[in-house]
Length: 191
Length: 259
Image (cartoon, each protein chain N blue to C red):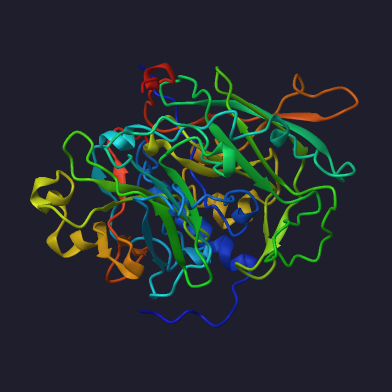
């Protein structure tokens, strides 16, 4: 079968705040949810400085490992909070920091759980994909982590935190530099 | 690490850098598939210098969760969100345009019921954003952001005004060709696309390092809408058509229905 040629990506540019971030975008669950956790970190450039104009998107299964098929991510406020949609969006602040309130992803079909992450920024010519794995588990048991050089594996794994009594995960994203995050391209992707 | 040059580059410098990279591409291939991976390191776009990964992207098989994408529905998007000329007391200044097309996967199947978000400068080339310092007027009747869901055949449609070109600080006398930013979701996480749509015949194409960062000339053409007189509405608006092809073969909406 003939494959159509894909539309190339371009940078999100400096003015995406006009359209992409939305109220409630970084809260996949309410702060008062009994299983709420914080996923946060800093997006850094090759000089180690925070990137103040980056956008991080999150996509994940629910706590039981179910992949959400629920719409409503853009209108999570009040009565429209229909359920767990699995999607969130957070712009970085002046220091390059982003944060989500969500639940710990469950295992899908026995695999090691992770948060699927997309990173966009001014200066970044195309979106980047990565995975933020939960801290526990044998790296050699995961088909991706097993193939990553041991020195770079840590860039794909969250650091567990329990600040303010609530469990949380720190996941810093380094676009470049000595701790450069492992970014992914998917097989079968025409680009 | 080399220190950044003190002197601000001129357009002539940038154009020469663009030409050298294009010539290198022609020399070393220009073969189909050669530039399959989008270039993230493109020195003429100065702010890419510290913001591109230096390691190659790691090629992986998508995990199950990455074979699915977030769902959006009518509770997410109001139909008036697709009309960027609405929502203000008056009509925005500028050339009213209709922008429409289809979102398809690489197998040509429509991507139905998915979210498209757009944002753009106004007709004078000014964004409604606090960091835009271009001394051109804001338009009290234009915000420049819109959303819609694709229809069953993958069709989207926006009503807006044609954005103006605008200056930026990449180099001395740098101007971006007129464009509309698009954010598109496919039926799989792996298909996420953020890009820019351009207008045919823009004299700034050759000068713009962001547009030229798509080093393959045929791929660059896929970012340019075409004027379509059949879309143009008499006494009202001119029409542009731009189809978007996402990577890979997404799942169809009906495949995705389960609880």
